[in-house]
Image (cartoon, rainbow, N blue to C red):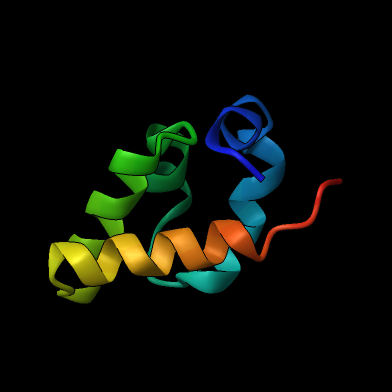
Length: 68
């Protein structure tokens, strides 16, 4: 699934992101608005990951999403 689809359907995908990264708040996920870079930054900040590790986590999560 590409980021344009995720961004366009972000309200539906927020729950999946919340399941993956439970430390992210609903407000933080809403503010990310499906933007990959914002989500990577949130994951990096909340979990103390290096940038590359946060990018890998987000990309793996995206790859595992199934179209609704």
